[in-house]
Length: 126
Image (tube, rainbow, N blue to C red):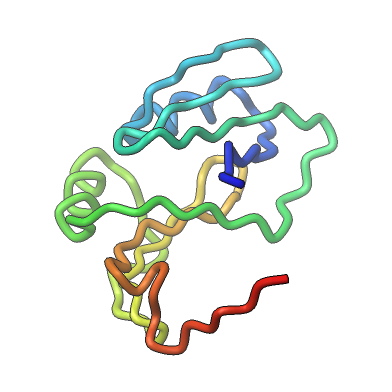
């Protein structure tokens, strides 16, 4: 099984699609109530869905980039505001945090081999 995509709820489709295009994603579907984006690396996609009863929940979306610090610095030049600068975490990931216009949390990170093979990895299969 492979993860196809994640869909985030948004309160303003126009503002949200611009935000993600400016972040560097390619928009591949554009309707008044739904948008889908292609990630610049790999073949992952994610989408936005207009939610008239929007309530920012506990959604966090992670985007991995090997040159995290360069990416964050480039986005700051474009005017993006970060809640957390790139920071080494105890779980061996380096993360920066920002929010989209609807309040969804975005973590830009680099984990390298630790993403799939942390030192504490367990092999549990049914």
